[in-house]
Image 1: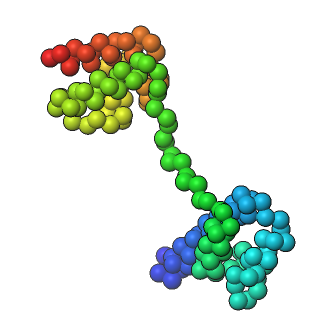
Image 2 (image 1 turned 90 degrees about the vertical axis):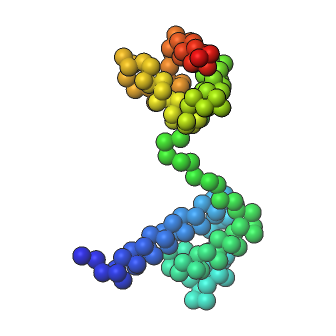
Image 3 (image 1 turned 120 degrees about the vertical axis):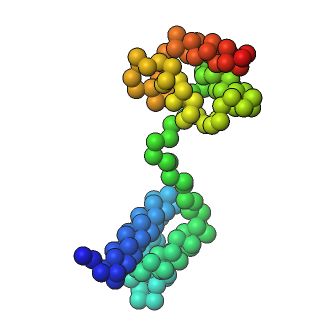
Length: 153
């Protein structure tokens, strides 16, 4: 069983590895040659290390701040499992009807996930509906008609 100190050390090591990765990404994004990069590293730590792997986490954070002043921008990571919404005419209409049903109080959850779950329930013979994009034209039209009838009730 790992002790508390071992667990904290493992977490710190993982944190430093992520910081080193960000520093390397910044180097590439800013187009710094190796000598300039190592000079920058050396100027940000008292021991004069020229390797990011030898720096402490607070030193790496200082390097990242300096790189930020030079123009480095951290890009947000894509969330796993996200996909763009379908944007064809039929899907927009389906989504609009779904939101209208929510406004009428007939649907409690207006989310895309709830809409897809509803669609999956309407086409039980079709396996694997994970997004509106996966519906064919006939299924989309059928879903539109079902939602229209529900709105009319």
